[in-house]
Length: 211
Image (cartoon, rainbow, N blue to C red; front, side):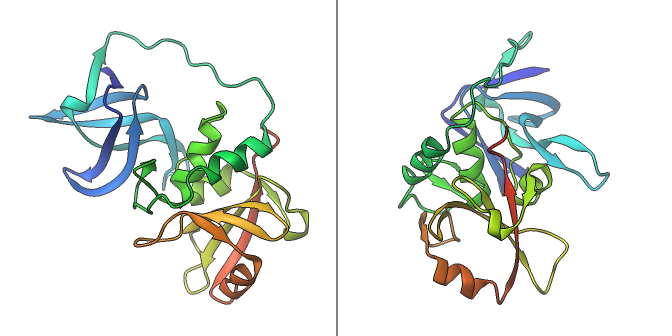
């Protein structure tokens, strides 16, 4: 069963009202897998993740029924054919400065690190994965020396190297923009702080500017 999100923001939960996975925005497409009273278990068709089976699948989760409008079919999706505007990418990220960090957040009420990145690419009509680890998997891999405007810097804890846990947007001249952690707001990240964090994190670098 096909649905469109009809509310401005809809939380997608791991369990009903427990463990926010992500947020869906008005007009995003979902497919219903299961119904349980006022709740729907859905696939978020516009937010992909790389599963343990090493396949790309839509994000699953629980959604409140009153957040959706049921549809018989979806209109065709159209991705952007225009080149990515890197200056606009930075400008869009800067428009989120001082917005609070929210785990699973993907709106101006609150964003997490990868939600911010997902949103600014989406604003230009480009679809990239929802989570930091998956964003890295899909990105063009580059070196630190190749960093340029609009590239991404990924963080993997040195004590647990199997999964990337954080991502920031590189601006220029050593500065980046990030949604840091709970209790903080979207802010600039100077090179001095980035260098200090490298003691705790392995850094990797990716690019979507060739989309």
